[in-house]
Amino acid sequence: METVVLSILNKINGERTIYSLFHLLQGKRSSQTIQDAHLYKITPYFHTYPTVTRTALEKMIDRLKQRGLVEEIAERKVILTEKGKRELEQKLGDYNLPEHLNGWKYHQVTDSFWERLTLLIQVSSNLIHHERSFIPVRNKRETHIWVKQYIRQQNEDRYKLSERLYVELISALDNEKTRPELVVLRLTGFKKIGLTTMQASEETGLEPAHYHFEFLNCLHALFDKVVGNEHTYPLLSGMIKKAERSVPLTISTDKTYRLMQRGYTLEEVAAVRNLKQSTIEDHVVEIALSIKEFNIDDYVLKEKRERILQAAYQNSAKKLKQIKEQVADASYFEIRLVLAKFGDKEWS
Image (cartoon, rainbow, N blue to C red; front, side):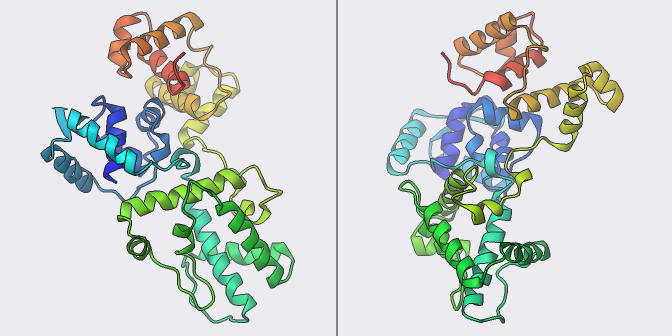
């Protein structure tokens, strides 16, 4: 966990408070958090540790300060010290950050997929051994209903279904840059009880947070293989709802986007929805971040866009005020929108 926190703090570089990190790990779907995740290229960590608490994060930051790894430059804004940068470099040499981790892309898929997969494996394993009396590994009624319906939809005997599931899972988990055993340890089957997160952490000798991120890395690597490859992985692909395969807009932003698609101006959208203009602008920024084909030319002149990007490049910063000083005729909305659309791309 410390390596992840230091890595994120190093990218933010004191331009946001430590609570931006808290909101990132929790997956807060606010305009600011979403935009920061893209601007600082920390989208892989979005919603990857939702159980983290403010108190726990504050205590960790305080420990890092006591060890001289970070220093506070403003209230709850910290930067890595030279010692902290050396420490991070050493940690990254010993432990590579999860390469396939993609919280932004998969945060709405991960939990439901894991619930379905673990219950389906347990049910299939017990069925082929003619065992119908067992305690389900999952308690959610909706998961139970889904698995029952899914098994019926396959319309094949239990042995073939189990074999297909096994073959797909072995193939999907096969990856030189992940540790599939971290997932396998958690699976429950006939006369086999999967380990809890803490038990798996102890079994593998990994610190709990380290285990958690490596576990997510395995699942996200699996998603990379499965999504868009339904012919090879029909069973696993079927566990991911089509509606969940892309990152949707928040409900309010989606309503704004629908009106924009019908030709409404931002002022008209604000009037129709009885919302502040600034709120609608937040929605547009989220749309630019979430929808690749969204064109911002109607909102920012190309010439001004280039000047904004140049100012951001020259300052190597994401602070809106600094960019505004160099591009005085640009509004903060225009700056945010340009950075949202192009800010997470490599500078050329």
